[in-house]
Image (tube, rainbow, N blue to C red; front, side):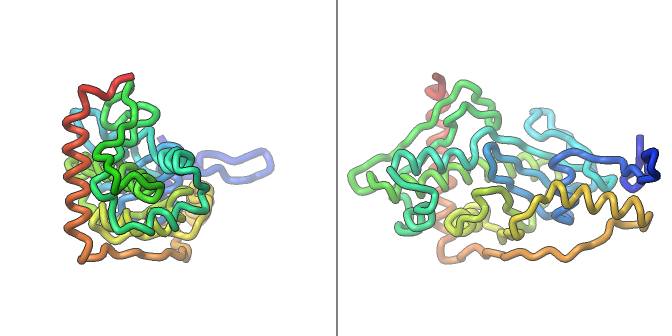
Amino acid sequence: MAGPREAVGETPTGLVLAPGTGDNMGAALGLELEPGDVVVSLGTSGTVFAVAERPAADPSGIVAGFADATGRFLPLVCTLNAARVIGAALTMAGAELADLDRLALSVDDTAGLVLLPFLDGERTPALPDATGMLHGLTRANATPAHLVRASVEGMLCGLADAVAPLEASGVTPRRIVLIGGAARSAAVQRIAAGLFALPVAVPVPAEYVALGAARQAAWTLSQDETAPRWKREETVVQPDPASAGYYRRVRESYSAVLAGAQPLLTR
Protein backbone atom coordinates (compact mmCIF):
# COMPACT_ATOMS: atom_id res chain seq x y z
CA MET A 1 0.00 0.00 0.00
CA ALA A 2 1.48 3.34 -1.08
CA GLY A 3 1.36 6.54 0.95
CA PRO A 4 -0.39 9.62 -0.46
CA ARG A 5 2.85 11.16 -1.82
CA GLU A 6 4.88 8.00 -2.27
CA ALA A 7 6.39 7.39 -5.70
CA VAL A 8 5.44 3.89 -6.83
CA GLY A 9 7.85 3.54 -9.71
CA GLU A 10 8.82 5.21 -12.94
CA THR A 11 8.33 4.74 -16.66
CA PRO A 12 11.10 3.52 -18.98
CA THR A 13 11.70 7.16 -19.87
CA GLY A 14 12.20 8.13 -16.23
CA LEU A 15 8.80 9.70 -15.44
CA VAL A 16 7.89 9.29 -11.75
CA LEU A 17 4.61 7.50 -11.04
CA ALA A 18 2.39 8.88 -8.27
CA PRO A 19 0.18 6.49 -6.26
CA GLY A 20 -3.09 7.55 -7.93
CA THR A 21 -6.57 7.79 -6.42
CA GLY A 22 -10.30 7.65 -7.24
CA ASP A 23 -12.64 10.21 -8.82
CA ASN A 24 -14.28 11.67 -5.72
CA MET A 25 -10.98 11.53 -3.84
CA GLY A 26 -9.30 13.36 -6.71
CA ALA A 27 -12.02 16.01 -6.66
CA ALA A 28 -11.57 16.46 -2.91
CA LEU A 29 -7.83 16.95 -3.41
CA GLY A 30 -8.39 19.34 -6.30
CA LEU A 31 -10.85 21.35 -4.21
CA GLU A 32 -8.35 21.43 -1.32
CA LEU A 33 -11.05 20.45 1.16
CA GLU A 34 -10.66 21.07 4.86
CA PRO A 35 -12.58 19.35 7.69
CA GLY A 36 -16.06 20.88 7.79
CA ASP A 37 -16.28 21.34 4.00
CA VAL A 38 -19.14 19.17 2.71
CA VAL A 39 -19.18 18.72 -1.05
CA VAL A 40 -22.55 18.44 -2.76
CA SER A 41 -22.07 17.38 -6.37
CA LEU A 42 -25.03 17.96 -8.69
CA GLY A 43 -24.49 15.83 -11.75
CA THR A 44 -26.56 13.07 -13.31
CA SER A 45 -26.56 11.57 -9.85
CA GLY A 46 -25.78 13.32 -6.59
CA THR A 47 -22.91 12.78 -4.21
CA VAL A 48 -22.32 14.25 -0.78
CA PHE A 49 -18.91 13.77 0.80
CA ALA A 50 -16.46 15.31 3.23
CA VAL A 51 -12.89 14.91 4.43
CA ALA A 52 -12.73 13.37 7.92
CA GLU A 53 -9.97 12.58 10.38
CA ARG A 54 -11.42 9.19 11.34
CA PRO A 55 -13.20 6.46 9.37
CA ALA A 56 -16.98 6.38 9.15
CA ALA A 57 -18.83 3.60 10.94
CA ASP A 58 -22.40 3.48 9.62
CA PRO A 59 -24.31 0.25 10.36
CA SER A 60 -27.08 1.31 7.96
CA GLY A 61 -24.69 1.23 5.01
CA ILE A 62 -25.84 4.64 3.76
CA VAL A 63 -22.41 6.18 4.27
CA ALA A 64 -19.68 4.61 2.14
CA GLY A 65 -16.38 4.66 4.03
CA PHE A 66 -13.68 5.61 1.53
CA ALA A 67 -10.13 6.77 2.14
CA ASP A 68 -9.20 10.17 0.70
CA ALA A 69 -6.00 11.01 -1.19
CA THR A 70 -4.15 12.58 1.75
CA GLY A 71 -4.15 9.76 4.30
CA ARG A 72 -7.45 10.83 5.85
CA PHE A 73 -10.97 9.54 5.13
CA LEU A 74 -13.80 10.44 2.75
CA PRO A 75 -17.26 9.37 4.00
CA LEU A 76 -19.66 9.61 1.06
CA VAL A 77 -23.40 9.32 0.39
CA CYS A 78 -24.74 8.85 -3.14
CA THR A 79 -28.20 9.56 -4.57
CA LEU A 80 -29.48 8.51 -7.99
CA ASN A 81 -31.46 11.69 -8.63
CA ALA A 82 -29.90 15.12 -9.04
CA ALA A 83 -29.70 17.52 -12.00
CA ARG A 84 -31.93 15.40 -14.25
CA VAL A 85 -34.84 16.13 -11.90
CA ILE A 86 -34.63 19.81 -12.87
CA GLY A 87 -34.32 18.88 -16.53
CA ALA A 88 -37.49 16.79 -16.33
CA ALA A 89 -39.40 19.62 -14.64
CA LEU A 90 -38.27 22.08 -17.30
CA THR A 91 -39.51 19.70 -19.98
CA MET A 92 -42.87 19.41 -18.22
CA ALA A 93 -43.01 23.21 -18.02
CA GLY A 94 -42.25 23.58 -21.73
CA ALA A 95 -39.08 25.50 -20.84
CA GLU A 96 -35.35 25.32 -21.51
CA LEU A 97 -32.35 25.24 -19.22
CA ALA A 98 -31.83 28.94 -19.90
CA ASP A 99 -35.23 29.55 -18.25
CA LEU A 100 -34.32 27.85 -14.96
CA ASP A 101 -33.27 30.86 -12.91
CA ARG A 102 -36.00 33.11 -14.29
CA LEU A 103 -38.74 30.62 -13.46
CA ALA A 104 -37.43 29.37 -10.11
CA LEU A 105 -36.76 32.87 -8.78
CA SER A 106 -39.95 34.44 -10.15
CA VAL A 107 -41.95 33.02 -7.20
CA ASP A 108 -41.07 33.47 -3.55
CA ASP A 109 -42.07 29.93 -2.59
CA THR A 110 -43.75 26.80 -3.90
CA ALA A 111 -47.07 27.63 -2.21
CA GLY A 112 -47.17 24.14 -0.71
CA LEU A 113 -46.08 22.18 -3.79
CA VAL A 114 -43.68 19.36 -2.86
CA LEU A 115 -41.83 17.22 -5.39
CA LEU A 116 -40.40 13.89 -4.31
CA PRO A 117 -37.58 13.60 -6.86
CA PHE A 118 -37.27 9.83 -7.22
CA LEU A 119 -37.66 9.80 -11.00
CA ASP A 120 -35.18 6.95 -11.49
CA GLY A 121 -35.84 5.06 -8.27
CA GLU A 122 -33.53 5.99 -5.41
CA ARG A 123 -30.52 4.68 -3.57
CA THR A 124 -30.66 7.06 -0.60
CA PRO A 125 -33.21 6.47 0.84
CA ALA A 126 -33.32 2.86 -0.34
CA LEU A 127 -36.33 3.00 -2.67
CA PRO A 128 -35.15 1.27 -5.85
CA ASP A 129 -38.65 0.93 -7.30
CA ALA A 130 -39.87 4.40 -6.37
CA THR A 131 -41.32 6.96 -8.73
CA GLY A 132 -41.52 10.72 -8.41
CA MET A 133 -44.52 12.37 -6.81
CA LEU A 134 -46.07 15.85 -6.78
CA HIS A 135 -47.96 16.66 -3.59
CA GLY A 136 -50.04 19.69 -2.68
CA LEU A 137 -51.10 20.77 -6.18
CA THR A 138 -53.65 23.61 -6.18
CA ARG A 139 -54.89 26.14 -8.71
CA ALA A 140 -52.59 28.69 -7.05
CA ASN A 141 -49.39 26.70 -7.61
CA ALA A 142 -50.25 24.95 -10.88
CA THR A 143 -47.80 27.09 -12.85
CA PRO A 144 -44.51 26.36 -14.65
CA ALA A 145 -42.63 28.57 -12.18
CA HIS A 146 -43.92 26.71 -9.11
CA LEU A 147 -43.16 23.34 -10.71
CA VAL A 148 -39.59 24.32 -11.57
CA ARG A 149 -38.96 25.78 -8.13
CA ALA A 150 -40.41 22.65 -6.50
CA SER A 151 -38.02 20.53 -8.58
CA VAL A 152 -35.02 22.50 -7.31
CA GLU A 153 -36.23 22.30 -3.72
CA GLY A 154 -37.09 18.59 -3.98
CA MET A 155 -33.71 17.70 -5.45
CA LEU A 156 -31.88 19.69 -2.79
CA CYS A 157 -34.02 18.33 0.05
CA GLY A 158 -33.00 14.83 -1.01
CA LEU A 159 -29.34 15.84 -0.89
CA ALA A 160 -29.79 17.70 2.39
CA ASP A 161 -31.16 14.46 3.82
CA ALA A 162 -27.93 12.81 2.68
CA VAL A 163 -25.91 15.20 4.89
CA ALA A 164 -27.57 13.88 8.08
CA PRO A 165 -25.88 10.43 7.90
CA LEU A 166 -22.53 12.19 7.44
CA GLU A 167 -23.18 14.19 10.59
CA ALA A 168 -24.11 11.00 12.44
CA SER A 169 -20.78 9.51 11.35
CA GLY A 170 -18.86 12.39 12.91
CA VAL A 171 -18.73 15.10 10.23
CA THR A 172 -19.53 18.61 11.47
CA PRO A 173 -20.50 20.71 8.42
CA ARG A 174 -19.38 24.35 8.43
CA ARG A 175 -20.16 25.08 4.79
CA ILE A 176 -21.36 23.44 1.57
CA VAL A 177 -19.10 23.28 -1.48
CA LEU A 178 -21.43 23.06 -4.48
CA ILE A 179 -20.07 21.56 -7.71
CA GLY A 180 -21.46 19.96 -10.86
CA GLY A 181 -23.37 21.35 -13.80
CA ALA A 182 -26.47 22.42 -11.85
CA ALA A 183 -24.29 24.34 -9.35
CA ARG A 184 -23.91 27.15 -11.89
CA SER A 185 -27.56 28.14 -11.46
CA ALA A 186 -28.16 31.20 -9.28
CA ALA A 187 -31.49 29.70 -8.19
CA VAL A 188 -29.84 26.43 -7.14
CA GLN A 189 -27.15 28.32 -5.21
CA ARG A 190 -29.63 30.55 -3.37
CA ILE A 191 -32.08 27.76 -2.54
CA ALA A 192 -29.23 25.47 -1.45
CA ALA A 193 -27.99 28.08 1.03
CA GLY A 194 -31.49 28.26 2.49
CA LEU A 195 -32.17 24.52 2.68
CA PHE A 196 -28.76 23.56 4.04
CA ALA A 197 -28.77 26.62 6.36
CA LEU A 198 -25.05 27.00 5.71
CA PRO A 199 -22.82 29.17 3.53
CA VAL A 200 -22.60 27.72 0.02
CA ALA A 201 -19.22 28.04 -1.71
CA VAL A 202 -19.32 27.67 -5.50
CA PRO A 203 -15.85 27.13 -7.01
CA VAL A 204 -15.22 28.32 -10.56
CA PRO A 205 -16.14 25.52 -12.99
CA ALA A 206 -13.14 23.24 -13.54
CA GLU A 207 -12.15 19.59 -13.89
CA TYR A 208 -11.44 19.09 -10.20
CA VAL A 209 -10.69 15.38 -10.51
CA ALA A 210 -7.94 16.21 -13.01
CA LEU A 211 -6.71 19.06 -10.82
CA GLY A 212 -6.54 16.65 -7.90
CA ALA A 213 -4.44 14.24 -9.96
CA ALA A 214 -2.12 17.11 -10.93
CA ARG A 215 -1.84 18.22 -7.31
CA GLN A 216 -0.98 14.68 -6.22
CA ALA A 217 1.67 14.47 -8.95
CA ALA A 218 3.21 17.76 -7.80
CA TRP A 219 3.16 16.52 -4.20
CA THR A 220 4.88 13.28 -5.16
CA LEU A 221 7.63 15.21 -6.93
CA SER A 222 8.11 17.75 -4.14
CA GLN A 223 7.91 15.24 -1.26
CA ASP A 224 6.78 18.09 1.00
CA GLU A 225 4.95 17.20 4.20
CA THR A 226 1.69 18.63 2.86
CA ALA A 227 0.19 18.87 -0.61
CA PRO A 228 0.86 22.11 -2.50
CA ARG A 229 -1.78 24.80 -2.18
CA TRP A 230 -2.96 26.39 -5.40
CA LYS A 231 -5.07 29.51 -5.71
CA ARG A 232 -8.74 28.63 -6.25
CA GLU A 233 -11.50 31.18 -6.87
CA GLU A 234 -15.01 30.75 -5.55
CA THR A 235 -18.15 32.70 -4.80
CA VAL A 236 -19.98 32.31 -1.52
CA VAL A 237 -23.75 32.56 -1.07
CA GLN A 238 -24.91 33.14 2.49
CA PRO A 239 -28.29 31.90 3.76
CA ASP A 240 -30.82 34.71 4.16
CA PRO A 241 -31.94 34.86 7.82
CA ALA A 242 -35.28 36.32 6.74
CA SER A 243 -36.02 33.14 4.76
CA ALA A 244 -34.89 30.66 7.42
CA GLY A 245 -38.45 29.92 8.57
CA TYR A 246 -39.63 29.24 5.03
CA TYR A 247 -36.83 26.79 4.27
CA ARG A 248 -37.35 25.05 7.60
CA ARG A 249 -41.00 24.51 6.64
CA VAL A 250 -39.93 23.23 3.20
CA ARG A 251 -37.70 20.61 4.82
CA GLU A 252 -40.47 19.64 7.25
CA SER A 253 -43.05 19.36 4.45
CA TYR A 254 -40.69 17.27 2.33
CA SER A 255 -40.02 14.91 5.25
CA ALA A 256 -43.72 14.59 6.05
CA VAL A 257 -44.70 13.87 2.44
CA LEU A 258 -41.88 11.33 2.11
CA ALA A 259 -42.90 9.56 5.33
CA GLY A 260 -46.52 9.34 4.22
CA ALA A 261 -45.77 8.34 0.65
CA GLN A 262 -43.15 5.63 1.13
CA PRO A 263 -45.70 2.76 0.97
CA LEU A 264 -46.84 4.14 -2.40
CA LEU A 265 -43.41 4.77 -3.95
CA THR A 266 -43.33 1.65 -6.10
CA ARG A 267 -43.69 1.23 -9.80
